[in-house]
Length: 462
Image 1 (cartoon, rainbow, N blue to C red):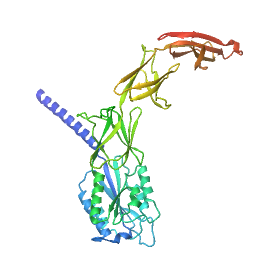
Image 2: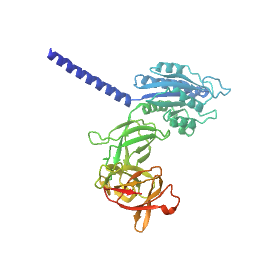
Image 3: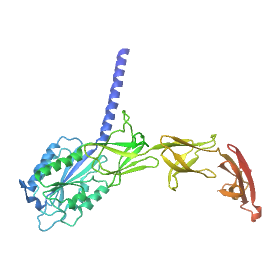
Image 4: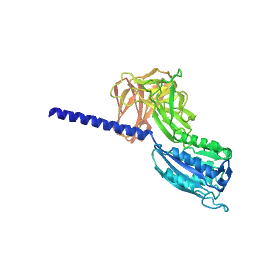
């Protein structure tokens, strides 16, 4: 009986482990495989009845697009939709809102798209910009989707709109990726290249090739590695977050914490090849790589030079009474704060020269601190002491440090604190100047000189 129970217990353990592993694999799959949604924006204007090589343009476009749809029937994580423009109202007159989402996004709707294509009858004008604007509402809300627009047209805007501005607006809003545009039968690159990635299809063969390239770029996985280079231009730096920004929408697209794989090489990332990226490596200070364009379907290498060293901040003979002492870190000669580091910690920085401002009383300024690659620079300050200023009444007063024959202002006493104030001060000689709030003559001003020693408490009575 006991043996049987052991067998069942062991089986339950393996079953649970298997379920956990399966759940983790599904989670990884869900996280790494976004749903790609391709919206075909199809030109149904009157000009599509024009003769082109073996047939009229509309027939060739129907046939080749339907062939592409057949090849995509079993592709996972893919949905498609069809919007047509210029097909509902006869020209003339010119109707500039003539566009319609004919087949919305859904699973396995390829047959519906092909059927609708067969029944499109070119009639009207070309409200291209308006059709692009309206496509924003064709994509249902989705947290993990790639929204791709493929515009197939044989002409240019005829309703006074701006297709380039319409496209850029949707990209900036993060609604779509950079569109693909296929120009049928004529070269309209100059007018439409600014609206997306333009493909010139001056023949049926080129049109078929353009369709294949567009779908390949929309679907194929593209990989990249980020080489974080040290002072010797070797990719040895790692364990830092990297953000890829879409340069059009200016929104963060990916966050990766840089990792070395089991071979000791920068890990391989799967990245959408359509956008142009700005990469920010979040070292201290950060490093930016601009205008990154990936080769679709290939392995890309991105390099950023980020040699780093360490800065260790220490307090001589630290005791438990000193907590959270901080230091401002700036690039040498610059006012901008790049970091605030606590003492008794070690932080990583780009190699270079820095100015330090220790936020103690009085301030300590340590300039031209050099941080070398793969080296720890240690900065140590004296152990401070504690001054307890005891007051018998409310009043006005200040604390000064004696520096030679001068007095350097350090701190104003708090009028709302009636009894005592405790201050952590660097070693040195000081003087407190104080007058009671209720005294009406300056001659009642009190002075108290004292010395602060490391790790000691000094009481000052006023």
